[in-house]
Amino acid sequence: MTGPLLRKLAGFASPGARRAVAGALVDLKSLPARLADPTRRDEPWNFVHNVGNGDFKIIGAMLLANLRDHAGLKADDQVLDIGCGNGRVAAQLAPILRDTGGYLGFDISRAGIAACRKLFAGQPHMAFRHLDVWNSEYNAKGKVAEIDTVFPAADASFDLAFATSVFTHMQLPPVRRYLAETARVLKPGGRFAFTAFALEPGREATEQFAFRPIDETSAAVDPKYPERAIGHRRPALEAAIAEAGLTVAEFHRGYWAPGGEYNGGQDLFVVTKA
Image 1: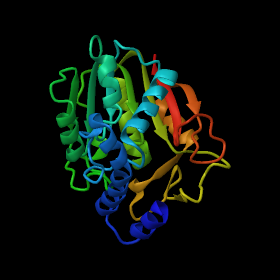
Image 2: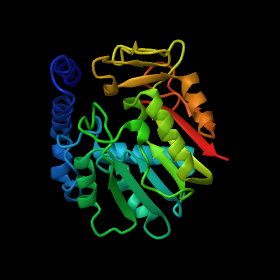
Image 3: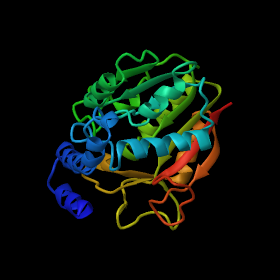
Image 4: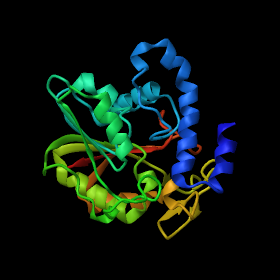
C-alpha cells in the first residue's frame, strides 16, 4: 500500500509533506521493534526527518557493511558523512571509531542534525554540523546555493568519505561541486563511496523510477520537483569524477533496475584520491 499511496500524494503534496507522510509510515512499521528492544527507543522518528524507507538499524548495518566491503573502512579512519541524515550510519560507526578514529557528519536538514546531536550526546568523537544549503526536496528555504557549498572541514583531513543517496537528489552542477569539495578534504589515498542512479542503456528507467530527461546528462522522476529523485548518465558522472581529480576504483550496479550486482538499491561508486 505504501507505494500507491505515495504516488497519489506526489501529485498534490509539497516535498516536505510527502516525506513526512512517508516517514510516518516507516515509523509505524518500526513500532514493534522499538517496543521489543529498549535500546532502540531513542532512534530518531522518520516523520520529523525522513531519509528513506527502511528500518533504521537494519539499513544502517547494511550501509556499514558496504563501507567495510567496498571502501576499506578501518577503525582508525577519520570519516566524513556527507548528508548524514538522522544518523543511521553514524550509529553503526560510533563504536567502531570510538578509540582511534573520528567522525564528522553534516546535513542540510536542521531536524536531522538536531536528532544526531541528541542521539550522540556525550560522544566527543562524533561531530555534526548543519549547512543551510538550498535543495527543493530537503531544504527549500536554504540560503546557500548548492554550487557554492563549502564542506566544514580542512584540506586533506579525512581518510574516508561517503554520501548515501545524496547525489540522487542533486542536479549535475552541484554534484560536481560536491565531488570537488570531497577531493579537497580527502587525504592523499583517501576513498570516497557514494550512491547514484547511474543511467546506462537498458537501465534508464523502471516502473518505480520512471525517469524523464531534464537535460542532456540527467533525468528526474518528477520534473516539477527534480530533486525528488534524479538519475545521471554514467559517462557524465565519470567525467565529473575525473574533473575533480578522483579515480573510479569500483562500480557496482544496484537493484533499482535489472542487473543488480550487490545488495544496495542504488548504484555504488568507490573513487580514490591519488
